[in-house]
Length: 406
Ligand SMILES: [Zn+2]
Image (cartoon, rainbow, N blue to C red; front, side, top):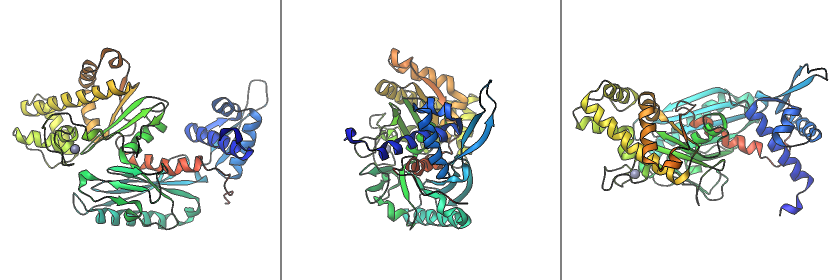
């Protein structure tokens, strides 16, 4: 297959490399691009010319160089293309619009009427939010590349394209029946792609956050649910049908607490926010609700040595550390990145303690070969990560697209 690469293939491949590099660096020079992409200066000049014609990159003037010709700065043209990303949760839907510099330029949030909303309610919220954001940005419509959805559950992907009839959401923990992508959203004329929410967050961290440039990483998302992206050799581990990384339902306690998925002893049933708050309630705590404020009160009380709260947090750290150490032994990461609102709050108070426990529970070698860090994006990057799905599609577009006018 590879021996018959056509000029067109080579050109498309070079275009992808240069465009990817420019989205990552935002601005560079021909020399910088040649170095980063391993291409000749002449090739860079051609590719940049093509990308300028597509309206995706721009000449940003020149800077003087030492005794030579001025160096031209080349940057991403923010208004050259737009990407939509959505964070679809059980509580509501956030749809965000990004320009090509991946700056968020618009946002639409729709709350579900009830906690534990039905697929129909969530689908209606998504439909409304997408319509609202498209209506508001009608002038940009022909430059919106597509919409990526970050979904709450296994997103089975038959052919690896993240799109079309082969994509099915299996949200077992929410008690939803399997849903095809088109049952979730009907958006004629809009390219819709989907991935699991935790994988979308991991992608955002890989492109622009704490896992950037890291070939082997674990990006963990702790909230009500517990998710994970496993980065191995610079790519997200997916498995046969893209469900790999369902860490929240790995069994950590034999015959442990019942989980939303129907099993027992799942990690999520021991360190998810609901689990922590009910454990506190069982020990006499009185959390206010089930959200951020209640969890913050729990960790604050534990920090102040309240015995019940301290016992709950201590137990959670223990289980979390064991589970992370299992992953460290299995995957040998360079970096462990923790995020999600529960993860961030625990890291804020107990980072050193958690790190020490993970290292202690890991084998000595892999246990000394990783750094632990908080997510760069404070739990709010599922939509950004999902918007990377249409961005990838734009980058890997096999043909030079029609130039954008205006
Ligand atoms: Zn479970």
